[in-house]
Image 1 (cartoon, rainbow, N blue to C red):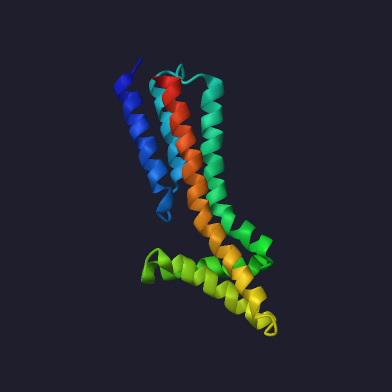
Image 2: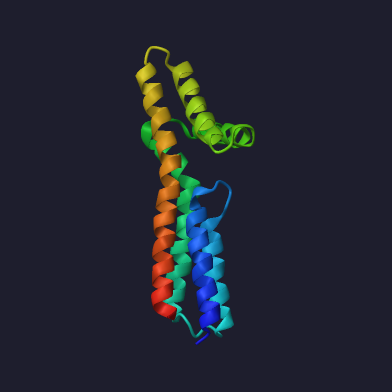
Length: 160
């Protein structure tokens, strides 16, 4: 057993879990690479192949959820895909101007304005669509963190 490598991998997995809340950090992909890197150091004997595949799949699924959650929640709220994509792009631009709050302001504001422009008689609909999109973006960090925390725990149980 390579305890120093296992401990280093666990520390990295904890860091990637915490980095789920930092924009533009591909935490799930980094967790998958960490698990694969550790498996490589042990000649793919630890963790077992089934556990290794499961950990990598869950890590990559966490990344996918992080990328798609804003779009999914925006669509569930009734916003068009185009509106959510434009809102996300505006949020990314505002990230560099306003920091992390820029994503929320850009996405929420864009979805609200476009939805309100489409139907000025229904400001509540625009507000609901905007809220769904923002909640989805904020919730994605928590979902990714929970999934990666599970990866960390299962990995630690499998190698220690």
